[in-house]
Amino acid sequence: MIGEVLVFFGQYGIFFIILISLINFRREARTLIALGLSLAVSYLLGAFFYSPRPFVSGHFQPLIPHAPNNGFPSHHAAAGLAMSFSTLNTNTVLGAISFIFSVLMVIGRVYAGIHSKTDVIAGIIIGGLCAIFAYSDFMSRKLNFLKNKIQYYWKKKAAHKVVSRDFKKRGKKPKGS
Image 1 (tube, rainbow, N blue to C red):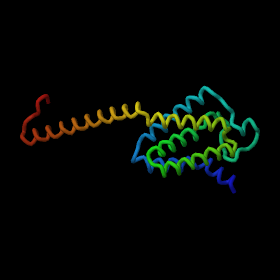
Image 2 (image 1 turned 180 degrees about the vertical axis):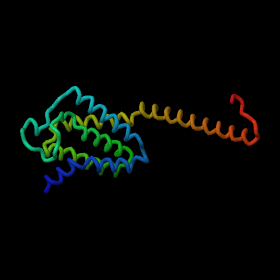
Image 3 (image 1 turned 60 degrees about the vertical axis):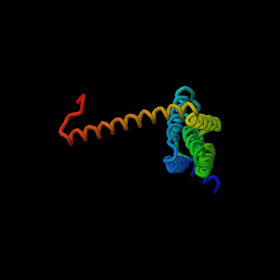
């Protein structure tokens, strides 16, 4: 029974974590930054370090079907924990639920023979560090700068439309047109 639950979460747990992150997304979009960063870092590390999956090196059939490719680091662990830590930072209840799903997913992937403990520990560290970076003061300053630039652009564009519309009503052309 416990094994079946672990295999289920090992295979489908990421979808529950994504769903919770989407529910929380309206409150805080930094989850997307943490997710993108964690996947980029984990794929980059995977290009430089190779670790065969346990079912490949142990010559057994995994409980979850998977290609016999590189297992290091676990992209599921990196993405799941990045989203869970991000959600936990903004919504304690949803974050705790997401974190429980992440833990079950990681344990399930090790139990199913898809990842070794080293693979998932590396993924957990990557996800955690990327979530911390997404909520750092540095990132806050960069996001506020970007937000201000976008708001300035839209206000300027909206003001130009109002001026153009007013001149069109009077039959005149605005200066510089």
